[in-house]
Amino acid sequence: MKICDSIYVVGGGDDGFGLSHQIDCTVYLVDCGGTFALIDAGSGLGLEQILANIKADGIDPGCVEAVFVTHAHGDHCGGLAGLKEACGARAYAAKDCARFISEGDVQAMSLDSAIKAGIYPPGYNFPKAETTALEDCQAVLVGSREFTLYDTPGHSDGHACFGVALDGRKALFSGDLIFYNGRISLQSTWDCRLDKYWASIRRMGSIGVEGLFPGHQAFLVAGGQRTFDSAIACLDRLKVPANFI
Image (cartoon, rainbow, N blue to C red; front, side, top):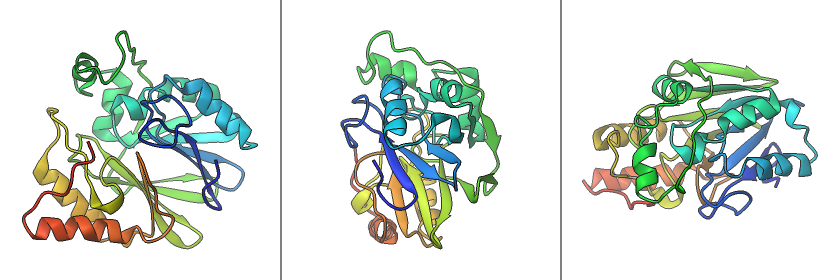
């Protein structure tokens, strides 16, 4: 599903666009001038539908060169191994995230707890996938586009956003850092940290975002800065922004 000149949505569940399995995050595909990059990989339960959606948009999955993973939660990275194999792509993430995924550390990812809580179905399996670790502000060139990783812990350790210039405007793929109207995503997990969360929101709110593409629900092709402004205004009043979950 093409949403603007260079971006497609090819996956997403009940908190997205109903294009793949119900627990999948929103999976974005970015045209980099004949080659493509994916942002996040879904849970793995909707893998075949995601691949079918890519093909339905007239794109050969073999043209996908990179998968950028925002964080190591199952709904965002469980499909990584399958997508890497199907596309022949390389995967990139922040250091902690890359390590958790490469080692298949389900405890570090809070996946064991999430399965017990019923968020994932019984018997859900996470296949580890080799993932390249990036430094903060490190950029990766895919075709004609440069993707820059920003460390943004808070929702989880190893969480990152990815920035890219689209038609001269800064777009940010924000994972689970922030959502439309300045909402956030707090969970009762070992690595959900308020102080780091607030710092990450303020940091990303200072870079001048135009397009904002979160891991769930509505995206903004323009006016993304207002979402950060709303959350920061709430923090400035010593309040906690509304929780997405």
